[in-house]
Image: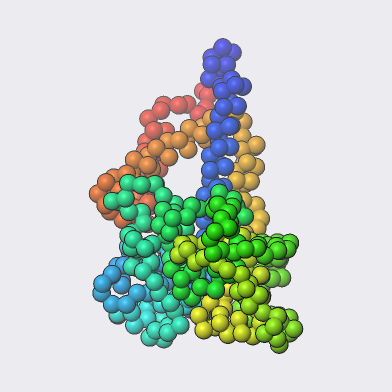
Length: 407
């Protein structure tokens, strides 16, 4: 039987235990941050069912498979989240984040003899899908991959809300990304010069720019700003369940008074001001879409430029992310971990954190070998890793010589 001093030596002291608990809480917090990030991107997408039967989804996570549709060979194609798991496991994939009004291409004529495992019968093409250079794995005006192994400059990527291409912060036409979280959407310089040329009349000097001088031909007065409810505040469980067709009907039914008279056109009023079109990206605050004119002439303008989606505040990425949070509301992995942690005694808490650290180190070393050789990690590789780790654990327990009973 162990002496009292020996038992005291084996048991961690309170200070050590507090450090261990703090480390475990940090582990759980890191896990929660990753979980929230994944929910934001994938939360409102289905990871089990192909979205093809749902038609052109308002917004969903998409992927491009360069194994099945290699760059420079054939036409670009995009697949939904479920198909990326079921039909393209182990393939070289480009993560496209989210795109609007897209129907899953998996298994159609662009994929040759390959058939979708989830839905076999699909049309040859989806003519209303729109593709940009992202489907070939390149982004920005520089048309470079991300991450770019030849780019040594650390820079964030920002998605244009109109063309949905991604841009380096240093390639936005000479403007800086605002620090304020009030600016939630960006329209790139190309779109400001093209389909969204009229937005210059709505653009008020942002906090990131210096106020114009009186010698410039620029906006003479600022439009009055009213209190607007953000898309996140408007997003309730009722709105989250509203279909795209229902939302279109709601948008078409906005203020008959605005629709009947061109004299009430906000854009015509704004055009009385002189502006300077600077050819750079612009940043827009939460709720800015609700300030766009909805008279008949402006609606025709949006349709001609194929940007009617700007009238729908539920089209925004932030609204999509909020729907994901509502969909997955409930106990998080962090909370479940904290609940489990409180049931453990001091020794068990130490064992848990040490086990986690061993797992983290071993997995990092294992994956590093794939990275150095440029190999793709497949599900079988992960299964082999945990199988080998379990075998080594059993061997350590067998060799320890610990007695689990007294004679």
